[in-house]
Length: 128
Figure 1: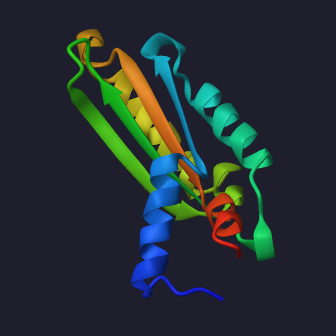
Figure 2 (figure 1 turned 90 degrees about the horizontal axis):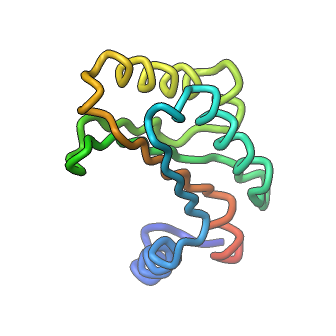
C-alpha cells in the first residue's frame, strides 16, 4: 500500500503526470465542440482506462481560448466516478460549460481544450 503523505510517492506521482501517464488531452475548434462531442470523447477515454482495485475516478479540466490564445473560460469538474458523466453532475457541469461558451461573442471562443486524468491508470503505474 502507498501513502500520498510519503514525499517519495508524491515525487513519483508528479513524474508520472509529467510523463503523461493517465493524462488524455484533446482540442476542438469551437464550432466543432458540442456537449455531445465532448461527452463522447470523455466516455471513450474512460472505456479504455485501467481500474486496479476498483479505482476508476477521473478528473476533467476544460478551457476555452480566444483567437489570440487568451483563456476566456475554464472549468474543472473535480474527481468523479465515470457514472457522473452519464446523467450525473459531471455531465451537467460539462453541458453548463458549453452553454456558457455559446453566450460569448464568437471572437472570444476559438478553441476548447479538455484534459482528462484517469486515476486508475496512475494507480496501476504506481503499483496499486
